[in-house]
Picture 1 (spheres, rainbow, N blue to C red):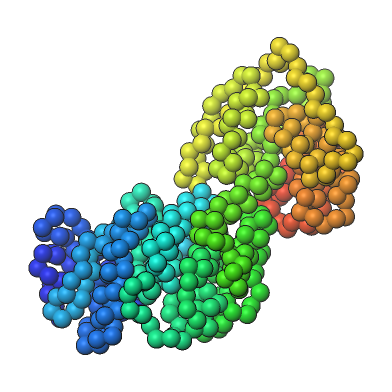
Picture 2 (cartoon, rainbow, N blue to C red; picture 1 turned 180 degrees about the vertical axis):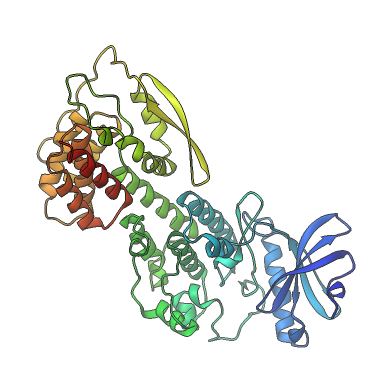
Length: 459
């Protein structure tokens, strides 16, 4: 069939932009409404298969029910032309997350969290309407001109009040994103979509799927029986808190997963927020008093070298600028662009001492938890009060020594940073070695180690 005759006459200048599954997708101009649309047409080889034709039409009906839902591709029309059913939907020019991953690999945290939040809203809305997508994957998460995600392709969706789309025991979906119950041929539920979204999250964060195998069959079976790999092992830049959230999202038992897609995304955001609060480097501090030993040139540049780490934390916490503004009397604004986001960072130039000195932070009694000591010491670091942070962090490291707990890694790093900021090289390299031994390689540790070796080697 000539391409010009594939669609009804009102859809002019069709250009095929995708082919796969049971349909072909064309970009065309709607002559009646003067807008660009995407038209999905049942493949010619399936045109005489009544079961497939019915399934394709039900896709349009299921998707049309969700057209007003958030972050969902809008359906404009469902019809049939020359014996082939078609679905007309909005055209999204930004491609898919699969395209983005293929070009760029792991995605920035800020983008990843936004995309997951948008997809979660669409999927939760579908579940509330009695519809399970059953094929959530990056190729079905499309991007509009504003780089926002919309969920597309309910071609294998199961819908309440509509006839079943598949035979019992048939595996429906894409192997790399199948929930264990789907891989076993069992009925998909909202929890199955939740699982698939966790797989997408893993891929956006690491650049790869959690159970990649050489064959689709092997990958589907790995979802059923293989242990869940930690994302931080695939991307050392990720904190281990993310592993715990993904482990629950990818739980083999649907009952152990998050109650909704939104709950999963909230937990992931909280994990990144909490990790940033314990591990990010301190903000640039006021110049040391004249009585304090001046840093070597390499150490004086430490804050600037680590500014990217501070800004990454600002994307997650949203509170760094407020803290900086509250603690720095005289400042200038410096605009920095990080992964597509412009942030105005407050940087001290000549800090005048306050009229009245604040009350010193009381040192907690010995019964305080080591993690609390670390958190309070870190807060003082962020405010530039390294003298106040030092005893708290020394207590935390002493009490966590040898525990192997992630809190020991964070406290060791924070103490190393604080000592360097005070002009002391005492035990800094050993502290960084211990932090890396517990939590693995991190770019913040590597940067601080380089500055410590350069600066402390000069003294």
